[in-house]
Amino acid sequence: MQEKDIEKNREYFKTFLATQKLRLTNQRQVIFDEFMKYDSHIDIDKLYAITKEIDSNIGLATIYRTIKLLIEAGIVREVRFGDGRSYYEVIMGKIHHDHLICVVCGKNIEFNDPDLEAMQEQIAAKYKFKLTNHYMNLFGVCEKCRSLGMG
Amino acid sequence: MQEKDIEKNREYFKTFLATQKLRLTNQRQVIFDEFMKYDSHIDIDKLYAITKEIDSNIGLATIYRTIKLLIEAGIVREVRFGDGRSYYEVIMGKIHHDHLICVVCGKNIEFNDPDLEAMQEQIAAKYKFKLTNHYMNLFGVCEKCRSLGMG
DNA sequence: AATATATTGAAAACACTTTATTTATAAAGT
DNA sequence: ACTTTATAAATAAAGTGTTTTCAATATATT
Image 1 (cartoon, chains in turn blue, purple, cyan, yellow):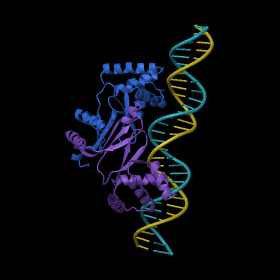
Image 2 (cartoon, each protein chain N blue to C red; image 1 turned 60 degrees about the vertical axis):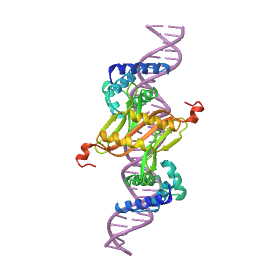
Image 3 (cartoon, rainbow over the protein chains, first blue to last red; image 1 turned 90 degrees about the vertical axis):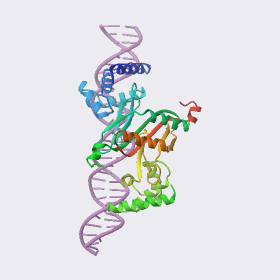
Image 4 (cartoon, chains in turn blue, orange, purple, brown; image 1 turned 30 degrees about the vertical axis):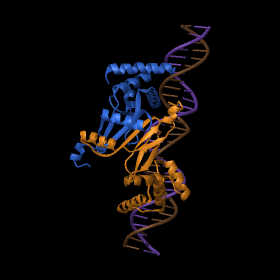
């Protein structure tokens, strides 16, 4: 993400905390910053490892709690790729994207397709739903893995 | 599902077990039958409860193990709706469907859209992926919940 | 029948996540 | 500044859902 987008999100997070009468503690700042800097979906362990390098006695529970806050604030969302783990990614200030995952090598491509987005809206409208969010994961085998005969 | 489709799947499951040198035990039969009869995504607890009524000392571990077999056989797939639980649904002998979920009341509509399926194939082709499967969940608020002012 | 193999339920182990408790920190009041 | 009060933190403990272990049992093969 661009620094100006990060800055916007930081302001939003501050406002969110303020309205909830919560504090912007140092731990929350570190977690927020490292999360925004990381430019892809990240899992708890990775985020824990990264933030622990900045502030060595940050707790795992605090990571969980802060991520929950970020989700509540609408800055972040949870995504899953079928490996049982939860991943988190920034959504605020970014255009929506879906995932295309290679089941052999695990390569994970983020893509955006406006036509697809439009079609999803149409489907929702057909069932008289007002969409709030959506997740789409396409699983397959990438070109490289196919050329290596792996599927 | 129609009984003839269930029968087909049963045959397939039997063949699958045979090729793996596994046995079609009574527990596996009961779990298979109840799963097929249930006409929507089901979670472990529910399946456990249902099968336990048929055979009162069926174990939870056996449910997990049998579901794993059914997934390996390609008869069933796991789906998740963001509530932390895993659900399972029959895919063999049914056309693919996606899910439209009301975030207020939890209503879960299964829908199939051929145009959408085609578009997914196109996207995969663009990235030179060979699709194996895909999951799409649309989250929103249904008409009823909106009319009640719940979102 | 004897032997080998697969399957089971129950319990233990496991991984991920949440909650409870005590301690530390920050804000507000004096 | 100093005390009071409230909030957040780390750590540890508890809670989930799922998988694995294990001894006992059932099924198939010789």
